[in-house]
Image 1 (cartoon, rainbow, N blue to C red):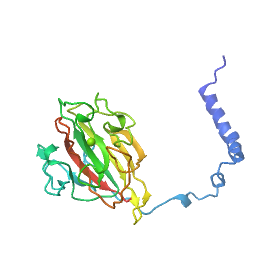
Image 2 (cartoon, rainbow, N blue to C red; image 1 turned 30 degrees about the horizontal axis):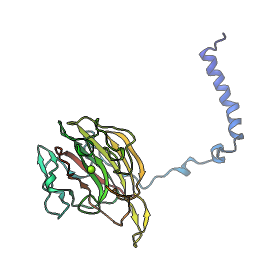
Image 3 (tube, helix red, strand yellow; image 1 turned 180 degrees about the vertical axis):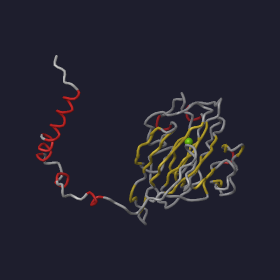
Image 4 (spheres, rainbow, N blue to C red; image 1 turned 90 degrees about the vertical axis):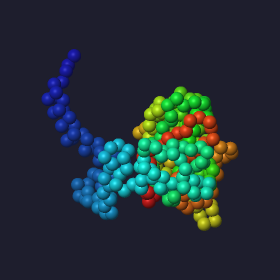
Length: 273
Ligand code: MG
């Protein structure tokens, strides 16, 4: 069998590139005229302003970048209040770790947000008990619209070998969207959520103007890809939108009897759109 030498192949490619390719390109109707014209100015499509702000990444993966609002850095709950009455948040902070106090109920940020990037780390306790939705259940509400479970919840649960309805497992948009994959680490290990939230917007009369979207990475793995929400996440019934402008981020104290979930390193970056 004839074998072309490497040099011969390169020579052939050069000939093809000089002769056949330009002819072929100019004959194709879908190649824009500008791309064929040597007179086209590449500067015409350059954008020079506004210059993106310089942001310094955190020193380690997951550490807050220079423009983040730090919501929990392991020291105190100064950024948080009880959802039910806005009294000081009464969850436990110990050795840099925040742990749910189920009796104290949900907690939420003092600040209110619209669109943002959120990072948080959470841990199912080693030796977790229970099953299904009763095994390490908590949640992060990207917008809290009431003191209970009103709002938009990304589920937190032990989904390491713990079957439940898939649109209620960890990293689901609760009762709306199962995660694309199960990226769960074992109980006792820290889990990462990196979330991009595009809030819904409303006309003054409360009519939905644009829906909410969410993108979620669980332990660095894409699990929700610009998912369009149907409204607030609800335990019973179909999702519905209710007008809000800005809202707190809320962490759930779920009533199941399993040992409580812990959190660390929570920060947020507000984004314009
Ligand atoms: Mg939950």
